[in-house]
Image 1: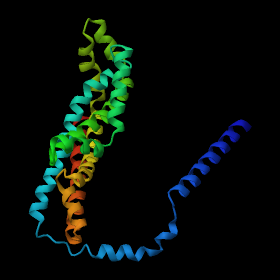
Image 2: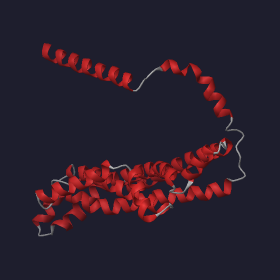
Image 3: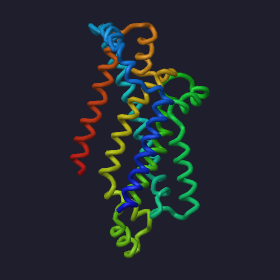
Image 4: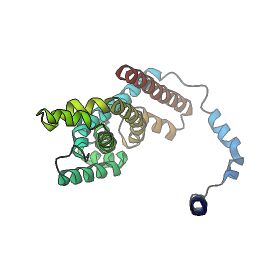
Amino acid sequence: MVWFKRSQFLILLCLSLLVIGSMKLTEFDLSKFRDFQNMGDFLSKWFPMNTESLPFLFQESLLTIAIAFLGSLFGLIIALPLSFMAARNTSRNRFVYSVTRILLSFLRSVPEFVFGLILLTTLGLGPFPAVIAIIFHNIGVLGKLISELIESADKGPMEAMLAVGARKWIGNLFAVLPQIWPNVLSQFFYRFEVAIRTSLILGLIGGGGIGQQLFIHFKTFQYQLVSVDVLLIMIMVIMVDYIGSKIREKVI
């Protein structure tokens, strides 16, 4: 009991030291909020909203959704087979498992923004490099998440199918995938939401969509258009979350 309390004290001490050190490194200082009035003055410039460009901005919002959707969907399609290769219980051998895990780690570790900068040199400006950048990163993220779902799946159905002579890939398709599919959909829609926000950042490097318009409006001090951009972004994220929850309800 004494050892347990001592270990708790050491964990709390280490955590406190990490918090204090991080606050010093990041110049964390709540007293800086004393100039909160400056933020209020800045936000007051956002209103009233300038809705004259709303049809054009709505079209750019649809482009953003298209970028995020394609990046998430193609990322999922490619990540699914890779995730079975990256799971211990479904991978062919240890070499395939290790190589696939390294590949997924690499794709996951490189931000979409970096992929976008690299692809711009080959593909030029526009939404296409943004789609490919999101696909690459989503392969790494979804591949890891789905492989963990596969490893935690019930082994019984898989063993039963192998016992009656089914091939391993048939067992993966009909015994493992149905178990994890609701969670796969949940991860897909979450990555879809993240991809919408990511496409906004890719707009800074010419990826198109509402993100590029938001950057232009901020840069040219058109704050009444910035408020419209932010409103459309909020509506997009809320819609994706609502539609995703309804689809998950149908599947589950």
